[in-house]
Length: 383
Ligand SMILES: *Cc1c(COP(=O)(O)O)cnc(C)c1O
Figure 1 (cartoon, rainbow, N blue to C red):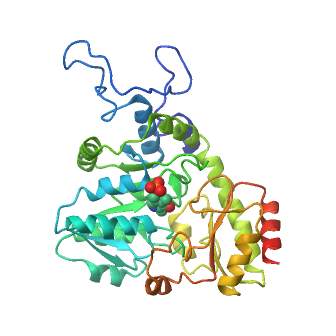
Figure 2 (figure 1 turned 90 degrees about the vertical axis):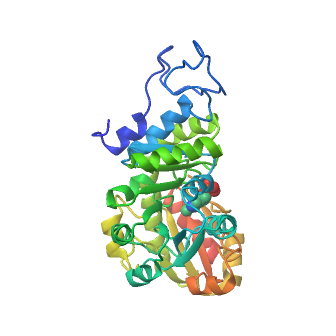
Figure 3 (figure 1 turned 135 degrees about the vertical axis):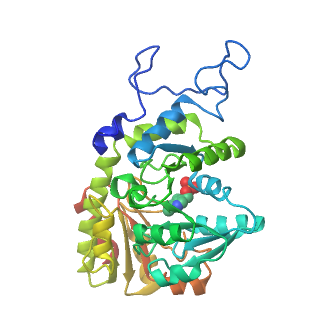
């Protein structure tokens, strides 16, 4: 199966017809425990569902296959997958985190793991010099997202991995914005990939989940121990829903990319829009890097700056009819949000300004509706 194309693996990897009935879909093994033949004698690793469950295992193997990884582990949420990674560290260790990172990630590193003595420094990882200068004696982990959220900066995964490995640190890429269809960080040198499966992988805004993928046997063993010991495992029904979602991941992502590209090009010509940031546009400052690093397209996230600032942004959000005002992203339905008020409200105003999260900045999660309808909706909202 590892030789097959992405779409074939999306539909089949990790899944086999059920051996007892032939059921074509992986059953929802809604069980907490398993009968043992004799004390300590059980089938495969099935002794208790926190440790292993067949529905979860199918999902873990499916996601591993899609990321080109040997191993996969699933979690109850994206942030619990992140927390499992942070549990690899010890008090006194240091982490480098890209500056324009998901708000919940920032909060987890700075307000929860800081209490355990794990120190974090924010770095603009588009600058090799800034990254190299930020390393400390005990920097063990480099954590990044690309494209970043919400300013869609592109970070060079291969270069960051080289620099981090020279300093003895591991690299984890949060690949949520791309999904494995658009970007495969392990093939570029990263050690770990993290996902909020809530977003594109789930794709239907009906599940909260997370995953970690790696090719390292050692990291996998340690993370599996943390998964078992801390216990932030996903519910079985959620695993089933995610398995159903990954079957269409490649098809959905292609449409997200096509729609986002059309919308980005359209808004670039719009007189109410000051600027458009989308990695697929020639005007994106790192368009060349995006072309090298991403495949098949540039994702469904588009960020725009409105000439009229906060008032214009508020009016636009109140007027859209097909787009819905909501946090989150990556679903089949189009969402619109105002980072300064919504997703990034917890980022201090000085840092928001430094990152370019202005009051006129609006973030679109472009869904897979008909592009003409989405464009007409944005036009009437901006009129
Ligand atoms: C949503 C998100 C997370 C957190 O995931 P949850 O499933 O909400 O816990 C982490 N990283 C990115 C990039 C996200 O968009």
